[in-house]
Image (tube, rainbow, N blue to C red; front, side):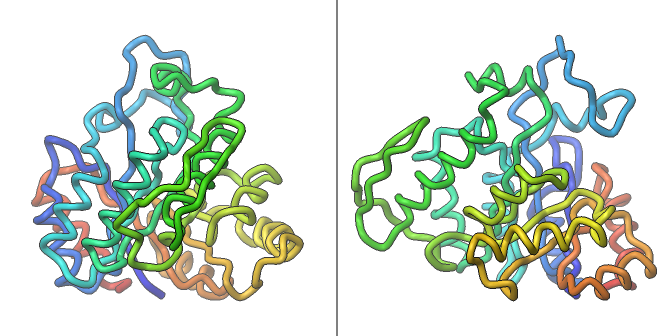
Length: 276
């Protein structure tokens, strides 16, 4: 099983190049980065984990810039977002960013996408909260039209693009590996079956019950049952937990690193080394 990591990289933590080099040298499979453009001070959206919102949420580095630095100092380390808040982006510009990063890294990019929890952040981007999932689906299909081998037009409910020359193309295929984050449910599973390669469940709880339902939705959409990928995300590891994932047929797990300076992060990497 491949062991990857995620971390809130900020202006106060270990730097992307330093972390990326350490991960690759230690045999970790990948680095996934979250995204928040800003956190409005006047906020009514509750923090999903409960309690006060940790300060790193308002200090996150741009994931694509940070992953570009990580790509430049590594050769095999996987690079991913966990997650990109798709509704908050212009899809034409985002498609270029994604394709460029995947091209320059030699096809090492995984696009983790999700729908967010912070209404105020989304509202500042002009996102109507109730339509953010449909908007994200629409933007995903628009980006795939730009990544197509031949100029392909797309006319959706929320946006459109003319048939265009749009290079570079993703190096890893018609689209980068795409994983959708979020809680189990029919809406989420329909998105995964429609445009993704798998699920990025935070914490990995409840998979024994959820996976059969997702697999049924996936198969009903005509997708290859063997192609579905499940990648538990932001996991605090134990031998028993990882053994359970292996029993479920999972071949990649993303472990949570602390949003800390170099010394603390490297100490935790030392601890996680026994799982690699």
